[in-house]
Image (cartoon, rainbow, N blue to C red; front, side, top):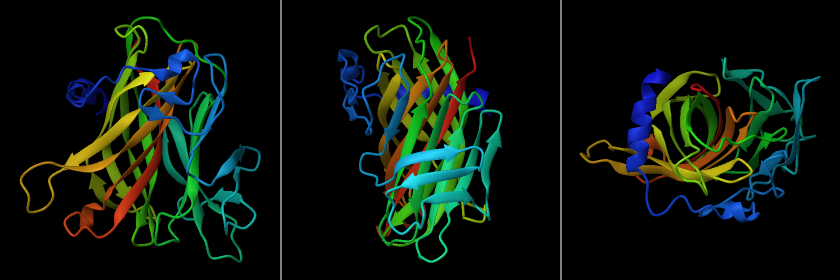
Length: 308
């Protein structure tokens, strides 16, 4: 299925371009933004440096995975007890594929009443990873955050094009009602290292999106997300905007449904792996006509090069 999406992804993504998306402010040594997209919080980066970026408006910091105990430590979240997260006792693994393993964790919360879930993805190489943490215990979106990281540098090609394919998983929380859900999907990115000498370019899709409750039962589907044309900095960091459309019940035309931003980082020598984060908001599909509550989805993807 992933292979058959490649041609469609390129054709559709090209129709989603707007303005001049290839202006890359990151090329002048300023790693705080790429084009018109402000990057999440992090230190200045280069092609030879590691990368670690945290959600700027999120509370979570110092997110550290301990492989010896299979736990995640997270700092600065209120009412999460000692900040140590064990494997979720209901759904410990959300996805396990050749492209990477996506595992779920929950806080060791014995006395307080706030339950947090953490979603972690790590590439088979161990060079890239991400963690998303959210809670459904608030009527608003609640507290949380994300981190994505590259361990080491990247050797960016100076020519050619490449296709990257892999998997996606996310957490959905709501504004106007409590609760938390999971999502999964397939991800494909097309990268042009040649035609835009100053900036390069990236486009893509997240498709086959499914919604799951906290027990792991499939409860719905979502439209595919278009990763509109973004840029790549000299450090191998990627940023752009994304969104989806659907035809609401009783209507006949497509309407904008979700919108947000994506951030990612290339890794490898040569560059053959990408890990990234998306953050989108929109109406809940079950409530899209009533205009009641909205949903925020935060997720991560890991994709590997599938063509030379």
